[in-house]
Amino acid sequence: MAGFLDSIGYAGWILHVLLVLPVIGAIATILAGEAGAKRTALLVSAVEMVLSLGLWWAVDTSSGTLQMVYRTPWLARWGISYAVGIDGITLFMVLLSTILTFLSVLGSWNYIEKQLRGFYALLLLLLTGMLGVFLSLDLFLFYVMWEVMLIPMYFIIGIWGGGRRLYAAIKFFIYTMIGSLLMLVAILAMVYAVARQTGRLDFSYEVLLENRAAFASMAPWLFAAFALAFAIKVPMFPLHTWLPDAHVEAPTAGSVILAGVLLKMGTYGFIRFAVPFFPEVALSSTVTGIVVTLAVIGIVYGALVAMVQPDIKKLVAYSSVSHLGFVMLGIWAGTVQSLQGALMVMIGHGLSTGALFFLVGMLYERRHTREIADFGGLARVVPALAAVFTVVALSSIGLPGLNGFVGEFLVLLGSFGPYPIATVIATTGVIFAAAYLLWALQRIIYQRLDKPENEKLPDLTAREWAVLVPLLIGIVWMGLYPRPVLDKMEPAAKRYIELSEPGRVAARSDKADRAERADGVVAAVGGGR
Image (cartoon, rainbow, N blue to C red; front, side):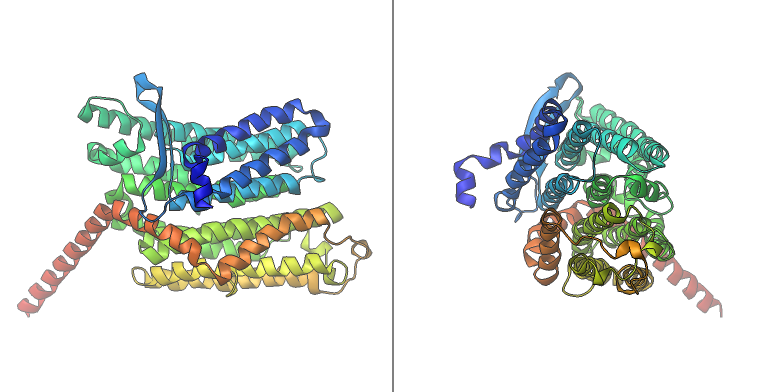
């Protein structure tokens, strides 16, 4: 496969095509009319997904450095360029985006009944925004793509969502916009600080990273701006309140993309930008204590709140708060195992939670309700749907042999050394996840079939199987044989730890200084005695 890709010059054009094709597809979708909109969107998203799969063989992840880097002036006077690249971390975010977008188009086939052109065009534009966030190596381009991603999701929730869709869409927009505007201010401050030192404006990721000492004096404020934007997107406790409303009111495709990809932009932002740019601040004892504490609170809080939800969609939404807490704990633990675990949770969460939202949407199409109390005994009526629901729920719980286990195990393994108490508390999140998901399964699928409305529900259709099977394959593959994925991301994980090493050295030195002062006090007291 690699030889074929080389023969067609795949590495030279693929990243540009992945960014441009959805935009062309969105225009074609609008021109196709209501009748042909979803077919056009399905074709474009399928081509996009197939083209992106070649990245598995084409991207050389062995060095951990950015590959396929391309840079050309855009607004040269201001040091802004069109710059893209990919590494072993970005690779999986790109594949997750293209696969879930294709499945979302297919999954919306019968769900969306009005303004089809607008809906499918916005889904494709959203894909360009998501890929742009992951591929950008120019911070101005990154910011533009961050905002491009926001607008389609706002309209998807606000037009095709549920009864409180406008409230949810505005809340989502305001939260994200506040964080992104502060991030823009921080980007401008970084660029001008570097310009004073180098004599030229440059928004390049590599240039800013190489000259991060130029804005070291402003690092606490700059990190706070980046961290707020990314923490809102994760979302970290207590900045999570926009998420349940957005999930519950969004159409199924919106919920899948939101959980599967958009939340990962926050954690990706910490890994790519916030920590490498400001390692001394990000990994200081104060910030580390805050992040680890909030991550653990998010893990436990999200699980406990999910346990009492009467709405199955809101239950899945709060479970995301819990799962993403594991990612933040893994990032700040700073070991290769914990970081790989965090990345595996990001990927696994996209598959499992995406599948859960698809299944919830399929149930809603049949019964037009998401209340857990309205179901019961579905295993007797829709055995295939019940079986798939059970497997996906078990993967979200973290059952060994399925994808959820690998990521959470590596996070806990890598985090126990630096943060044993936090890791032990975080482990309870796994127990609570089993409680809320197994209880939901019992009430929806395995109780008595005591409601006449549930007695004649249709089982999974061929189209629904086509949506779920790729996710099931990913869930089982990553659970039974995660090595190929881990091997591809390990060099990039090590590279991240190298970039953040100044902060870790400073943190260790600060810890050593405190220990030395404590020893001195003890010695002085002992001498006094």
